[in-house]
Image (cartoon, rainbow, N blue to C red):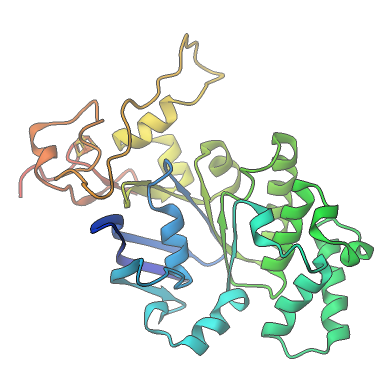
Length: 322
Ligand code: SF4
């Protein structure tokens, strides 16, 4: 299979008040060209930091990629120089952020903002860029005539469509979508997700979709990675992971969802909180919350093993001592 992105042993730290926040810890992932990978997990799991790393957007000196390789079409993003990174961002890899208001410039019309992205990467005239901006607006379901309007003249859902139009303006090969519908009403969420799905098919864009919503993963993704405390703890196709989830954290995420098939009086949330990333516990970082924790879990980090076609990082499976 053709792999568009491969992340190997990525670790990212942030530094604050003489403390080190271990945001991402030895993460490994790969994405097949044309596929959509869902990154799921609670807030603080390291999902957004992973996406920012792919664009080499970790701000130094507050943050630093301390180890790892990020291979985009075989080229290591982390060793690219400034000119290569500028070319990569927007043209080959684009990102959609959660809140459309922070992504749009309130002082420019939406048409100008789309056209600006086009002109940054493609050598076209102003008139051609403006015409492509209008066409892109129409692709995301907004009349081209509204290119002259400013962001405040659009509703939340329309603004997120504009953000998606900017992200797709140069037909990137990889789209990073960070909770793209979380700030929207439920009905608008469904419309925006449906639009993203049809655009992905139209432009054959590979996508990493960051979400905490397993329902969205089921609808939109081919592959899924569960993240916990900066690590991928379970990873495989959506079918394999959803049919036979193995990691106690993934199982906990499923159990905390309402079910139409099962008669449950109460939801079963995962007890406790994500560990403080400045003081990660030794061994498996999930052990203080894990209902199946064993003695070994608090002292030895589990190695990933392949089970039912997908990867699981848990001492319940595979080698018990090391
Ligand atoms: Fe639970 Fe141990 Fe597996 Fe971690 S390694 S998820 S603590 S059983």
